[in-house]
Image (cartoon, rainbow, N blue to C red; front, side, top):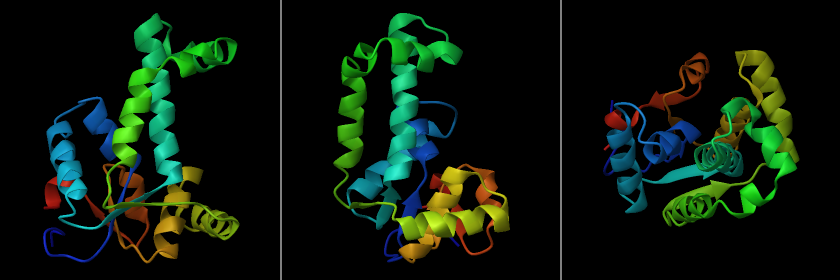
Length: 169
Protein backbone atom coordinates (compact mmCIF):
# COMPACT_ATOMS: atom_id res chain seq x y z
CA UNK A 1 0.00 0.00 0.00
CA UNK A 2 1.47 3.34 -0.99
CA UNK A 3 1.55 6.20 1.42
CA UNK A 4 0.79 9.47 -0.21
CA UNK A 5 -1.57 12.30 -0.79
CA UNK A 6 -4.38 12.36 1.72
CA UNK A 7 -2.54 10.21 4.24
CA UNK A 8 -2.05 11.59 7.73
CA UNK A 9 0.70 9.12 8.58
CA UNK A 10 3.98 10.96 9.07
CA UNK A 11 6.94 9.68 7.07
CA UNK A 12 10.40 9.79 8.64
CA UNK A 13 13.03 10.82 6.09
CA UNK A 14 16.37 9.00 6.22
CA UNK A 15 19.66 10.64 5.24
CA UNK A 16 20.00 8.71 1.98
CA UNK A 17 16.91 10.42 0.58
CA UNK A 18 18.50 13.85 1.01
CA UNK A 19 21.90 12.62 -0.18
CA UNK A 20 20.53 10.94 -3.32
CA UNK A 21 18.92 14.25 -4.23
CA UNK A 22 21.93 16.42 -3.39
CA UNK A 23 24.51 14.26 -5.13
CA UNK A 24 22.18 13.35 -8.00
CA UNK A 25 23.43 9.83 -7.56
CA UNK A 26 21.87 6.85 -9.18
CA UNK A 27 18.51 6.28 -10.76
CA UNK A 28 16.78 7.23 -7.49
CA UNK A 29 17.84 10.90 -7.49
CA UNK A 30 14.92 12.23 -9.55
CA UNK A 31 12.42 10.25 -7.48
CA UNK A 32 14.01 11.49 -4.23
CA UNK A 33 13.93 15.08 -5.48
CA UNK A 34 10.24 14.80 -6.39
CA UNK A 35 9.49 13.22 -3.02
CA UNK A 36 11.22 16.08 -1.17
CA UNK A 37 9.43 18.67 -3.30
CA UNK A 38 6.07 17.10 -2.45
CA UNK A 39 7.06 16.89 1.21
CA UNK A 40 7.97 20.57 1.11
CA UNK A 41 4.52 21.49 -0.13
CA UNK A 42 2.90 19.54 2.68
CA UNK A 43 1.32 16.87 0.46
CA UNK A 44 2.10 14.42 3.26
CA UNK A 45 3.52 15.01 6.74
CA UNK A 46 7.22 14.34 7.18
CA UNK A 47 9.79 14.35 9.94
CA UNK A 48 13.46 13.70 10.45
CA UNK A 49 15.93 14.08 13.28
CA UNK A 50 19.00 16.09 14.12
CA UNK A 51 20.94 12.83 13.74
CA UNK A 52 19.81 12.51 10.11
CA UNK A 53 20.68 16.14 9.45
CA UNK A 54 24.09 15.63 11.03
CA UNK A 55 24.72 12.58 8.81
CA UNK A 56 23.85 14.67 5.76
CA UNK A 57 26.02 17.56 6.94
CA UNK A 58 29.00 15.29 7.58
CA UNK A 59 28.78 13.75 4.11
CA UNK A 60 28.40 17.18 2.50
CA UNK A 61 31.46 18.58 4.28
CA UNK A 62 33.55 15.57 3.24
CA UNK A 63 32.36 15.85 -0.36
CA UNK A 64 33.02 19.59 -0.39
CA UNK A 65 36.59 19.16 0.83
CA UNK A 66 37.28 16.35 -1.61
CA UNK A 67 35.82 18.33 -4.50
CA UNK A 68 37.43 21.69 -3.74
CA UNK A 69 40.86 20.51 -2.68
CA UNK A 70 41.43 17.23 -4.45
CA UNK A 71 42.11 15.52 -1.13
CA UNK A 72 41.41 11.78 -1.16
CA UNK A 73 38.15 10.88 0.59
CA UNK A 74 39.92 8.61 3.08
CA UNK A 75 42.10 11.47 4.35
CA UNK A 76 39.44 14.22 4.25
CA UNK A 77 38.54 14.09 7.95
CA UNK A 78 42.19 14.27 8.97
CA UNK A 79 42.75 17.22 6.63
CA UNK A 80 39.66 19.02 7.94
CA UNK A 81 41.03 18.72 11.46
CA UNK A 82 44.31 20.24 10.27
CA UNK A 83 42.55 22.93 8.20
CA UNK A 84 39.29 24.01 9.88
CA UNK A 85 38.89 26.72 7.24
CA UNK A 86 37.64 23.95 4.94
CA UNK A 87 34.50 23.83 7.07
CA UNK A 88 34.13 27.59 7.37
CA UNK A 89 34.54 28.08 3.63
CA UNK A 90 32.11 25.38 2.50
CA UNK A 91 29.43 27.91 1.51
CA UNK A 92 27.51 25.55 -0.74
CA UNK A 93 27.16 23.12 2.17
CA UNK A 94 25.58 25.77 4.37
CA UNK A 95 23.17 26.72 1.59
CA UNK A 96 22.08 23.12 1.12
CA UNK A 97 21.57 22.67 4.85
CA UNK A 98 19.48 25.84 4.95
CA UNK A 99 17.36 24.48 2.08
CA UNK A 100 16.75 21.26 4.00
CA UNK A 101 15.97 23.06 7.24
CA UNK A 102 13.56 25.35 5.41
CA UNK A 103 11.22 22.49 4.49
CA UNK A 104 8.51 24.03 6.63
CA UNK A 105 6.20 21.04 6.72
CA UNK A 106 9.00 18.74 7.96
CA UNK A 107 9.34 18.37 11.70
CA UNK A 108 12.88 18.02 13.00
CA UNK A 109 13.12 16.03 16.22
CA UNK A 110 15.91 16.09 18.77
CA UNK A 111 17.32 13.12 20.57
CA UNK A 112 16.81 12.89 24.32
CA UNK A 113 18.69 10.69 26.78
CA UNK A 114 15.60 8.45 26.87
CA UNK A 115 15.69 8.12 23.07
CA UNK A 116 19.34 7.15 23.28
CA UNK A 117 18.58 4.56 25.97
CA UNK A 118 15.84 3.06 23.79
CA UNK A 119 18.24 2.97 20.81
CA UNK A 120 20.60 0.73 22.79
CA UNK A 121 17.84 -1.85 23.17
CA UNK A 122 16.96 -1.50 19.48
CA UNK A 123 20.59 -2.13 18.52
CA UNK A 124 20.60 -5.34 20.53
CA UNK A 125 17.18 -6.48 19.39
CA UNK A 126 17.48 -5.77 15.67
CA UNK A 127 21.24 -5.64 15.08
CA UNK A 128 21.21 -2.07 13.80
CA UNK A 129 24.13 0.31 13.99
CA UNK A 130 23.89 3.33 16.29
CA UNK A 131 22.44 6.00 14.04
CA UNK A 132 19.86 3.68 12.50
CA UNK A 133 18.81 2.57 15.97
CA UNK A 134 18.48 6.23 16.98
CA UNK A 135 16.23 6.80 13.95
CA UNK A 136 13.98 3.92 14.98
CA UNK A 137 13.88 5.08 18.61
CA UNK A 138 13.01 8.61 17.48
CA UNK A 139 10.27 7.22 15.25
CA UNK A 140 8.86 5.20 18.14
CA UNK A 141 8.97 8.19 20.47
CA UNK A 142 6.93 10.26 18.01
CA UNK A 143 4.60 7.46 16.87
CA UNK A 144 5.98 7.39 13.33
CA UNK A 145 5.57 4.04 11.65
CA UNK A 146 6.98 4.68 8.17
CA UNK A 147 10.48 5.56 7.00
CA UNK A 148 11.46 6.76 3.52
CA UNK A 149 14.80 5.10 2.86
CA UNK A 150 16.88 2.92 0.58
CA UNK A 151 18.63 1.33 3.58
CA UNK A 152 17.65 -2.33 3.71
CA UNK A 153 18.86 -2.67 7.30
CA UNK A 154 15.56 -1.21 8.48
CA UNK A 155 13.74 -4.24 7.03
CA UNK A 156 14.83 -6.18 10.11
CA UNK A 157 12.61 -3.99 12.31
CA UNK A 158 9.12 -5.46 12.22
CA UNK A 159 7.46 -2.44 13.82
CA UNK A 160 8.17 -0.02 10.96
CA UNK A 161 7.22 0.17 7.29
CA UNK A 162 9.89 0.97 4.74
CA UNK A 163 8.92 3.00 1.71
CA UNK A 164 11.05 4.10 -1.19
CA UNK A 165 10.16 7.54 -2.54
CA UNK A 166 8.79 5.93 -5.70
CA UNK A 167 6.13 4.26 -3.51
CA UNK A 168 5.06 7.53 -1.92
CA UNK A 169 2.97 10.16 -3.61
